[in-house]
Image 1 (cartoon, rainbow, N blue to C red):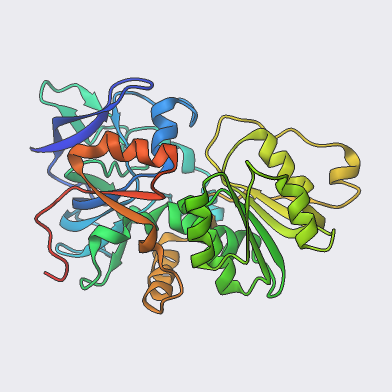
Image 2: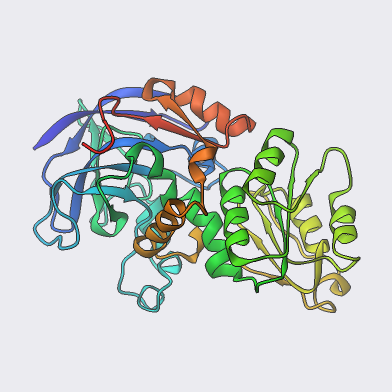
Length: 377
């Protein structure tokens, strides 16, 4: 059986999103969950799929991977989720490989297949057009839809008193930035960190660095409005790299030493190189943008002689079902005010919201897909 839904479809490379009537499989398989989407954040990874920088994607498809909603049905073998639960959606993982079993599901050996193949684990599609032609999914989630079919491991259950319109971005952008600090780099109290790019991911990293007790949190961007927000969130220093040599300024702020840690969210080769240069001896860089750009190594004396490190961190090395709840707890305590970064759009404004994300005018656009939803009900 199938039910009619509305989805924002990408037809081909660089095409705009187009709202279409689709059909979704109405009968979840054993480990699947049917979710009514209330809201979804827009992430740079969605744009990376649209413009091709995330690699091959089987168009046509529905992206979106920061969904929040209400469970409508569950499969026969689902044990952690029930009908009526309020949930945040994140990435999928198999739960059985060595990396999953040791607490690193973002390093799942089947991560690429599960999240980027565009089909369910058994190879079938969740969505079709009314003529029966296939529509591919993304992250086994596709939250740019009114209803979606996900795997049980995509789902984190949250309290029903939490506003679902706000929390979808905790499933990707915010858990990625914060997790890169909490899990990937794990800076010592009193250490120094530079964060290049203060969008959603960089801002989450900034808030996490403040929680970790970093003595200097230096934020670099080309948008003064973002840098002002970074100060509000806890940056000790900000640098507009259009106006000055940011690496030289970082060295000046750290008595000529450089920072112990750096995070690049831009994905621009030259800036990633600069971030390595901005490190102190023994420092660590986490380049975490989704990008087609390459990071070529600098001369021996810049890397090996100074024992600098480049750390790969995907999705903040976070276990979603644990990391998302941790962020909610920090948010409730006033330590992770991610909702200051959000701006709401209607579903029909999907292309406007995507443009605002790309041009930097909005840090975290969120589409309200169900405008009848009322928090707490």
